[in-house]
Amino acid sequence: MKSGRFGRSISLFIIFFLLMGFSPKNSAFQTVNLIDSPVATQDKDDISIANMKALMEIFQKDGEFSTPETYRALSTHMTAVGHYEERKLYKKAIKHMESFHILLHKHLENKHISDHAANILKEYADALIKKWEAVFDSERVMDHIRELSAGIGPRVAGTEEEKKAAEYLKKQFQSFGYDVSIQEFPINNRVERTLRILTDKNKELPVGAASGSATTDEHGITAELYYANHGLSGDFSDEAKGKIALVRRGENTFWEKVQNATNAQAAGVIIYDHDESLAPLRPTLNNNSTIPVVGVTKVDGESLREQLSKGAAKANLIIRTHTNQTSQNVVAVKKPSDVTNPEIVYVTAHYDSVPYSPGANDDGSGTAAIVEMARMMKDLPTDKELRFIAFGAEEIGLVGSHYYVDHLPKEDLDRSAIHFQMEMMGAKYEPASYLAFNTVDGEPNIAWDYMNAAFDKWGKDKEKLILFQRGLSDHVPFHNAGITAVCFNMGTANGGLEPEYHTSYDTIENISPERLQFAGDMISTAILDYVADHHPQQTHLKDAS
Figure 1 (cartoon, rainbow, N blue to C red):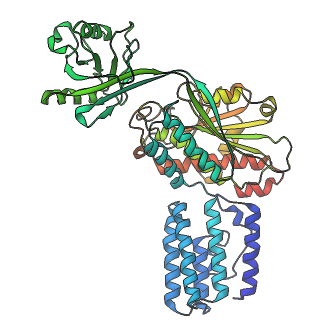
Figure 2: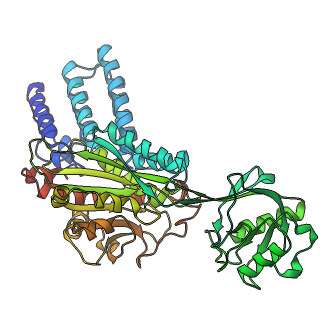
């Protein structure tokens, strides 16, 4: 093989690749036949590990390696990298390809490989890294979900945890070169409800504050628990005085239980459910209580009852209102150069969660997905203005997205072309294998056409793509403002969600990287193709996507 001719081919490829920018499905690599060897033509239309190993085999036959051991060492390393590529673990593949550079340099220094062979393999390795960097990578998404759900935890609107998450997202977008701002806005008063079992290592239980419950000061009430069965008048004795009554649901109304506990001079009431549920009971009193009242799950209630059967149990109960609360949107913008009044494409998710929920899927998964898409598109040549937005306070009424759209200048509204919202992208729940395309009016729009095309491009079963009429997320304000909008989520065939939804069980252990990859591949392809079809260099961008 002539090194001069091959070097020119590689150089042409590298230039072409850089002009193309990136290629999630590798189609940007389909124009240059790098090698005339029959060995390499096993996959001549794609820059791949297979072709790189074929190159090494050619170099081995042509005597470019001084020892067979050098060839085996480099080839074995490529085989290991290939395993990561096959599993779509692109972050790991890049890391190990960077190690390949070190190994290659070592062999070059020891004169175990010729200069021109080493240079070609280096360029090929760099091309593979560039390709992988432009692919939606569920491993990266999982890293962000882990930080949001486990590192930070529940991100209730107005809390320090929500603000900490906003700062984390701001740093991520800034690291990609976006112009990032924090948009703060007021929210309603927030009710804090906390139940800690002091005799069980201060374990905090998820609770639902009863409507009509009394509130406490910031310290709450600390008292021993008293088991009062169903909370009938005869279930209380003098020992209930000053204690927090633990009662079962059923036999009488919630209010009658609370009234009987109040008459017995109990300091508070915990009502536990009689049905299995992952979410805590939220009692409705239909009256105003003079003592704090909360609900818990059947499992937690029975656990407390068991503790009491073995001795005393002590708890701290807080129900208080926080005023002057604020939340914030994180807005990352990439503007095209030399384009006046570009159309705006929005890619968004909400990063807050409900109380007690780590929010790994709702909506850590959607938030992590838009961060990954922002990384993919950071160098995308386009005449569109891209806006990646993480909304706060979605869980209390789409407050962040309403505030954002309501405060858009008219000129921005006029330039707004389309909105893509990511919700709950990766539940492990077995039936939740369908990608839902949700619109406010239930009608397909231009994004629907691009989603169908994405399924065709990837050869996916289109029965897994379903159209629903559904609001309840941050696409609603955009739709109401006349902007084409869609919200995506992974769910069941009839639109259902996983049982962990809005519970303390919405953890990263219940996230499927495979579902994240599937949804991410489909949605990012649709977005990229939309941008490509509305760009002066339509053909090149279309190939890149």
